[in-house]
Image (spheres, rainbow over the protein chains, first blue to last red):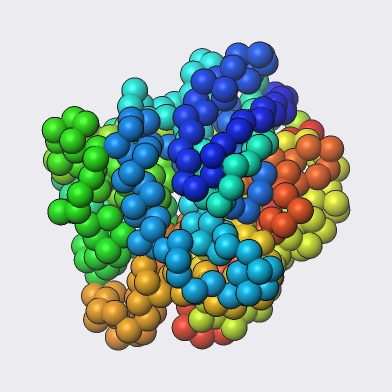
Length: 140
Length: 140
Length: 140
C-alpha cells in the first residue's frame, strides 16, 4: 500500500468550459505502480469543479451551462462582487455546488467508469485560467 | 493496510428512483476484514448519482425529484437529445450535478453516518436500469 | 500506510450558516503523523453538507444561501414535512444536493487547496445544531 501523487496543468477558456480530463488522469495512473485502490481528482481554486458526464458536444457546450445559469445566473446579484469589485460571484456559487473533487475506484489499473462516463473539469471563472489538477492515487 | 473491492447490482425504475443502498454497502464491508479507513461508493454510468438523505417516503418519492425538476426540467431543451435523438438530457445534467460517488469514513467497522442518514442511489434515466455499484474499501 | 481518525464538534446557527472549518481540519492533520495521502471530511447528519468556497462575507452570508433558496425554497411544499410535521424539508434537499463529505489530497502535510479556497460546513437545518465532523486521514 502506498500513495502516488500526480499533477498536471490544463488551460481553460473559463465561462463554463467543460474539459474532458479522463486521458490525463489515466496517464497519471499508468505512470505509477498502483493497480487497486482509489483515485481522488481535485482542482485547486474556488471557481472550478470536477464531476463526470458523457462528454459529447450537447452536454459539454450547452446543457450543463444552461442548468448552472438557472442555479446561479451570471447577471444575478452577488455580494461577493461588492466585496472584491469583480464579476465572478456566480462562478464561486456554481463551483461550491459542484464541488472541487471526485473519488473513483481503481480496479486492475482501470478507473471504474462507464463507457459514456468521462471525468470533466468545469471552469466557471469569467476569464481564461491555467488550472492545476491533483490526481492522488492510494492503494497497492 | 489493504484494498477490498466489492460490487453489487441493483434494479431501478429510473425516473428519479431513490434507492436506499445502505444495507448492501454494509454487507460488502462486513464481508471483508477492514475495520478502519474509508469507503467509496460509486455508480457506473452517467445518468445516476450517489448521495445521502433521510430515507423516508416524502423525500424519496417527491421532494428530491421536485428540486431536480427545477434544476433540469424533464421537458427542457437539451442539445444532448439532438445529438442522440433520445430523451434523457435532463438525466445527464442531474447526474453530473449530484456526482457519481461518495466517500464515507469507516471507524470500528461502522460507516460514520447519522441515524437518519442513509446512502442512496438516485437513478435519473428515463427507463429501468440494472445498475452496478462499486464499494471500494481502503484501510486496515 | 495507516489510517488516522479524527473528530471535532462545532456549534452552528443552522439556517444556511456557512462555517470555515479549514483550521480545525488542519489541526487534526497536524496532530497525526501522516504527511501524504487523502483527507475525507464528513459531517454526520442529513441536513448539513461540506464543500469548499472562498470564505468571505458576501458568499458566506448571502450568495450561497440565495442559490440554495432557488433550488429548494424554504417555504416550498415538502412531503417530508407532512411525514414528520416539521419544517426542514428544504434543509434535507439542500444537504443531499451538496453532499455530506469532501475528499482532498494531502501532500507534504499540506491540504491541496488554493489560497482563496476554504473547507466549509453549511448547516441547512432550521435550528441551532452541534455538529460532529469526521476527519479521516489515509496515507503515510
